[in-house]
Length: 72
Image (cartoon, rainbow, N blue to C red; front, top):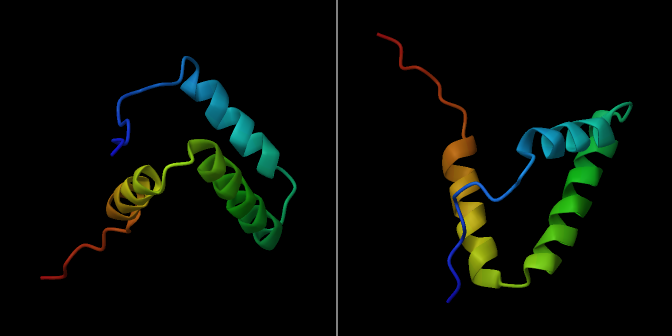
């Protein structure tokens, strides 16, 4: 089984972030969501390992959930 790499792998992470943001410029919410879905599928195919993708989804869900403060 291959393990998900969680340490920094990109030489220019900020540049990649800007590239992704720029790809969404001018898109409405539906087109932006569609671009994201296609990008995820392209990258999942490149990864080619279902277990690594499962680990990535688990990590993304755990860190991406909104935190709602509890009221007193």
